Image 1 (cartoon, one colour):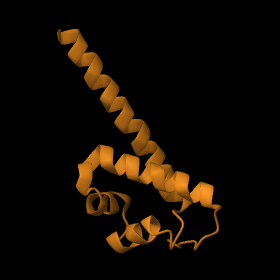
Image 2 (tube, helix red, strand yellow; image 1 turned 180 degrees about the vertical axis):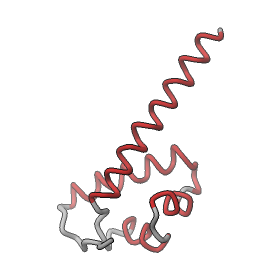
Image 3 (cartoon, helix red, strand yellow; image 1 turned 90 degrees about the horizontal axis):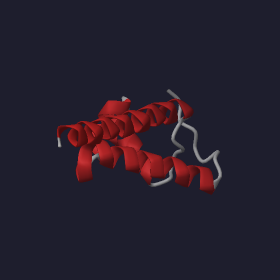
Length: 87
């Protein structure tokens, strides 16, 4: 996997970082960095470089994040509809 260094605009980079942080926090809680790096198949150092805006998050990782984002929202929706049915 190759990593691009700062080829995105600041706005694009911030949007990618926001998605990474939101998905990571939703799936793993406040200590999400290492588990998220493992889930994405990257070293924790790579994830830190993304967070420090030294490297851009690659398109293939963004696709994984989008899938995880959809999955976590689907799971949350299913859990809330199951609990409302049980009431």
